[in-house]
Length: 371
Image 1: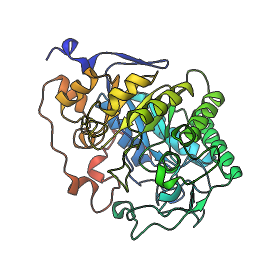
Image 2: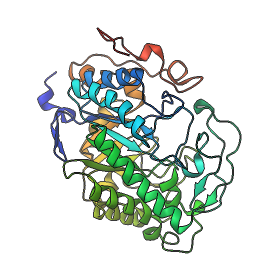
Image 3: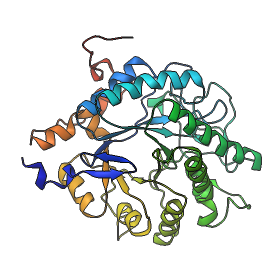
Image 4: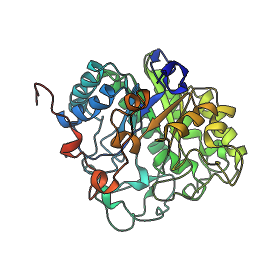
């Protein structure tokens, strides 16, 4: 196949990075760190294989930023202390050796925390018990506890912990960070109408509800080097409520994407279960809305493992796409597509059951392993 005629293999500038193709690795929770949150040699080999398979950039699994309320899952990696930084350097070095940049996704679980070694208390915009039940594939069971409503001081602490984590990501030799504002976690809980009952500047209309995400972005941008990429992930759907949609429709989308762009986002990473479908009952997709109202490169994620779906999403305004299930089934997806080789199907039971941890079969043995 002549990749010069394929939009997926056009180079793209992202911050100071020039990416050789449009295909990146999506963040995926794999709960394979040590109990105290340190990335492992196994994780280094796991991430490096995607860079070796020609994914042009990688985004890590959600990584907790503090030793307080942010951890969401047992065995989730953190970037909350010096030991975490040192452990992550092994991962970033392995990925850089394969020639790709890697971004740390900074995630505060908020009310959706189902495993936190630092506290039994949950923090949220309001004292609203989350819908649904905890995820068994990540070690949880039963309904979520009711969280505590964040005070003004708590909100300041949240911003400060994101900033401190981003500064540690610089020390760990990451090329950027992604602020996780999607999927029902803390920042998304502020954006979501039924989890945010506040009557201060962080509650009420959509401009107030997106305020905290924007303030985190602004603060992280101000604290990190100019060449350091600072992106944000946004969705309507949540791990515990896949059917939620912004009640204001396209008007809400306009405020969200304009506000995050004004806050300095280096990219807008939109994700849904199927990002190729309309964002609302009909009309444009979330990708198209981000492109229409945002002023930053758009990354699209969700049901794009079919190359034609990926190309169509690029055609409607995505600068880049990320793969999750497609990458797990095909760690060399870009190479396979470039060479017109068949793609393997994703096997959910084999890869993500009974626990969504990294399987030995997913981790190639290096020529001379240094564990």
